[in-house]
Amino acid sequence: LWLTDIAHHHLAIAILFLIAGHMYRTNWGIGHGLKDILEAHKGPFTGQGHKGLYEILTTSWHAQLALNLAMLGSTTIVVAHHMYSMPPYPYLATDYGTQLSLFTHHMWIGGFLIVGAAAHAAIFMVRDYDPTTRYNDLLDRVLRHRDAIISHLNWVCIFLGFHSFGLYIHNDTMSALGRPQDMFSDTAIQLQPIFAQWVQNIHATAPGVTAPGATTSTSLTWGGGELVAVGGKVALLPIPLGTADFLVHHIHAFTIHVTVLILLKGVLFARSSRLIPDKANLGFRFPCDGPGRGGTCQVSAWDHVFLGLFWMYNAISVVIFHFSWKMQSDVWGTISDQGVVTHITGGNFAQSSITINGWLRDFLWAQASQVIQSYGSSLSAYGLFFLGAHFVWAFSLMFLFSGRGYWQELIESIVWAHNKLKVAPATQPRALSIIQGRAVGVTHY
Image 1 (cartoon, rainbow, N blue to C red):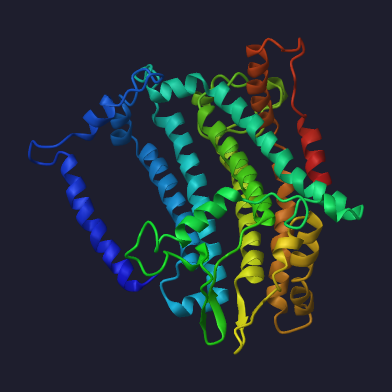
Image 2: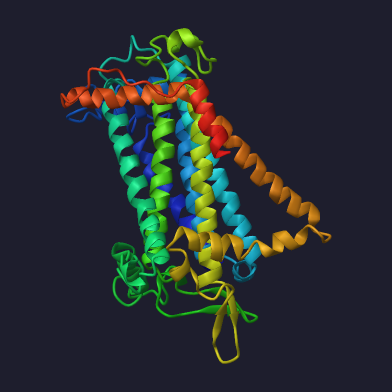
């Protein structure tokens, strides 16, 4: 991406915003008021539609902040992906440490901002939401069918979990049984990301077809066989996508959906649930109510943010592992005078990352030698930090599994779904006790 292009795009978007700005009313009586636009927006299933949203956004800082954090967080993650695929400076692309750090930095910030959006949306629900004035508008309609939303999102998460991780387990099993022909891979049963490849192809061929005036495509990563190297180091080249990429992206889909499930449940059940109908009076965060209320630990909106944070951490960690290995395997490396590219890990991503064992052996273990050797060197402090960080992560599991009230509320939504289909059992399901939950956490730890 040329800096001249970046400058021009900023100038061009400013002009577009100036024109678009005429839609809104200012000191002169022309244009629309945001209030009018929102109130005119009524769908067939949303009752009063967006009526009242203007008042919410002008009277509640938390509602405003929640929206802005969600948008800024999403944008930050988009930035993380553009900084390596369309680097504005030639030397940025060859500085692999900086590239990895920038990607990691922006992914983490994006994750935290999105979790923050859920936190402030929940605070808004508890402190600023007034159910007496909000009848039959969009928010009220969503709250009234929250059980449907959460129970559907729940089965989607379960389905994604079994099917994304299950593909890896299948591959591990076939690998262990010596049956490579029965594995999901580019050389056996192929699961090619055909839609992603189509997107890559259409962008790579754009200069000749849909954008005949352009000399090159928007990014080298789309394809086209070009390669940019600076001083014998690869800056960027077309990134091939195959079965391995298809598998790991579905793991991303799974972890992101679970994060959304936890955070959304925190927002939709912030004011009340069947387990604790008076949550709105108890506030954003409150402790367990003791055994009298059937184990109500980790059930407040604050606790949902806490639990959602773990899954955000899970999701971002997998993304960073994926990025680190994929780039070292298929992009980063050196180029000889004869034009032969040698990648850092020799292009092993496509064949190794299709099993869990491959991730453990060819990524974590293969790259752990530097850490292990660091203990006896001048870098020992960094090695111990690395060890300590993993200890903190393992320790956190103990807290993660004590969220009993959280599960009890989730079970209520599932019971609702069973009642809806008239397949409900006579028994009332109960989540683990606090002791059982902690036992599970300690065992995992």
